[in-house]
Image (cartoon, rainbow, N blue to C red; front, side, top):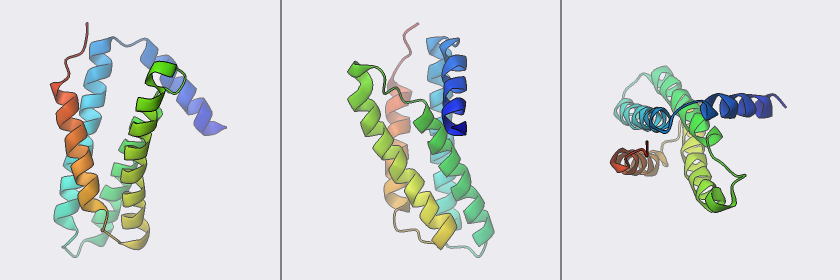
Length: 128
């Protein structure tokens, strides 16, 4: 119930934003995803396991935030939203493996997904 209330609050607040503001928020989230995944990749070989856990948790929260922005109500965008949801789920699952089991085997694929999303989104110009 709480998650549904949070989603409704976020949706209400984002309706008041312009297209350019929405675009910039998503771009920043993707940038944060890429930067944190790169930091996690660099830290996985170091001794600082607690730092890696914190970074993985942060990445999971960013991906969760992106997942909340998806629109399943609009029939035209439903299939796209489903595809994005699967990408975000992959990243979130990979991060859960890192912070719960210290397993990194999905980190490379998560990094590639995040880089592709960021580069693609950066090339889209918001319609104003």
